[in-house]
Image 1 (cartoon, rainbow, N blue to C red):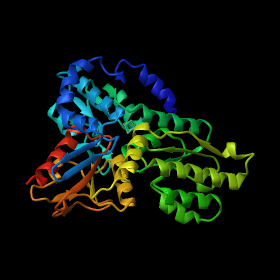
Image 2: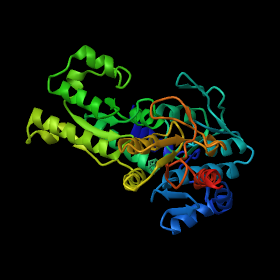
Image 3: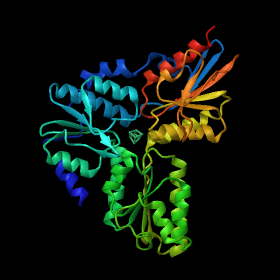
Image 4: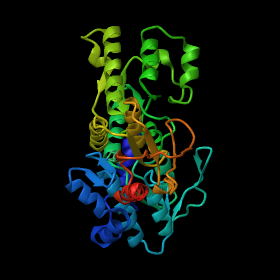
Length: 398
Ligand code: SF4
């Protein structure tokens, strides 16, 4: 499918909108009330530190709502204003944050249901309004909704669109896209749908397996078994790993994406030599600024003397998980929670250790002076962070 031609025609359609409705002022106060926080503002003004009795809170210097998320949420609110009585659907959570999605439900925005990873669009009719979330939608979903006569409100973050352009460039030049991402994540599913031949690698370990195969150190059956669900149809590792371009899910760990890029550059250099390298390896920077800033701020935060860290964000939020990985890599006690309600009045916390199920820890705040680092993913509103801090204050006030 010529995805670029499809997008061009979609963008010219009267039933497609990716710029909002010019109603930003009308929704500003609702957004402020729902998501912003004066407490967080004052902590920021105080050098990102709050001292309250025996509790010290240190905030990361960049955290929470990024530009792309703010834009997507504002567009969803504007959409409800613009279409007060139409049925409005969203193809997925607009962002990975339970409170934001709950607010949308309260505004009668309906969520397309999925079973076994397959979305059921049978409920969507001609004339319905459908919002595409910040991390985008697959080209097949867009095509289906367009053909069905829906109004499409596309809040896809421009950073995500930039990755789509990148894999389309790979496709045009007949390069295979190596996508650093999580194969089932909506953004990676969308990016894959715009790519031609592709292979998704989760981390450096998987990238190394691919690099080894390129250099003749792997077996085909084992390779295909490992990547069976992470590659384009009819992927042939002997044919399709000769010309590579690297792209990424925008919320992956920046340092790892860069390492993967360097690995494939070295691999192709070894295999084809410096003169031929450009014919076999393409690299564009597709790391999102906001993700990078939040990860940098986390690296600074974990250098501070902290007793523990609370990382706030949806459990399915990729960028939040990577923030927690940074805490774990430094051996700091860290707790990933999605809502303030995970903190109990009895000094317990229900959190999600990395890669494990929810777990309740008792007495998570020690007695005496305690220094707590806090950060949150790009889809967590300041209001949620404020409520978490309030809970910590309550637990440490005698
Ligand atoms: S994290 Fe980056 S790519 Fe994702 S919505 Fe925010 S700005 Fe866009």
